[in-house]
Amino acid sequence: MISLTYFFTVLFTFFVAEMGDKTQLMLFALTSKYKIRSIVIGTAAAILVINGLSVCAGGLLNEFLKYHLWIVKLIATIAFFYFSLTSLIKDDDEEEGGESKINFAVLAVFCIFFIAELGDKTQLSAITFGATNGLNVGLLMIWLAASIGFFAADMIGLVLAFVLHGKTPDTFFKWLAFAVFAVFGFINLYTVLMALALHKILLPLMAGAGLLFAGACALILLKNKKTAIAEDGGK
Picture 1 (tube, one colour):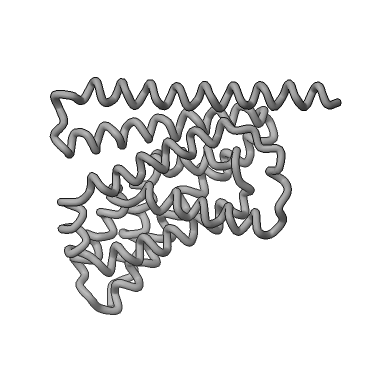
Picture 2: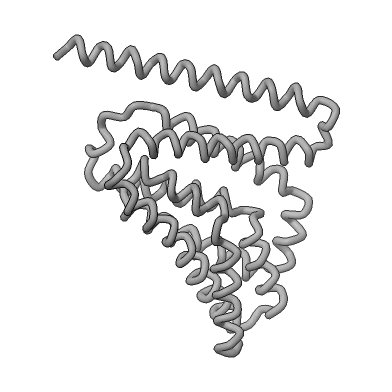
């Protein structure tokens, strides 16, 4: 059984590690797509699951990630680009759909958060604490401490986003979401290409990905424009 001092050490470690991390920015950006309740539930569930897996897996998961981290990063890359592009799509039914819409939002937030945190420093920290402690009842305390510290740090970013929402146009948050997810998408893409030792063709591949992404953005914006013109004509 771990001591109370160790419990708060783990909690504080995760709180500090998560401050300013990409997931804080992601949650900030997600406020343009989903309701606060859905984000909180999805985030809490993802934190509990990923920290639970990490502390239990310990050194074994650490070894697995060491050799297959590029696969995780590739999944994250695709997810980031997808949510960046969908941030641009005009959605007239955001407030419709009732409970099923909320359930989908919770699942979407869970998946985004879970994928983004795989291989991140906070997950590796959980692995380290779990491996150091060993397989005993102390893992439950580590899991709780890590999850509380993690969640507290992310909620600070979420509260800030909520406060600013009433004072900032919705279009600002949509473009912020687009930018945040796009940046992380390209960062993860760069990491994948480096991990695959594609140094000689790194620039052409990054440029090609940039062009494809820009083309997709242009198509979405053009579709939005046509939709807006059709709606204005129908009024």
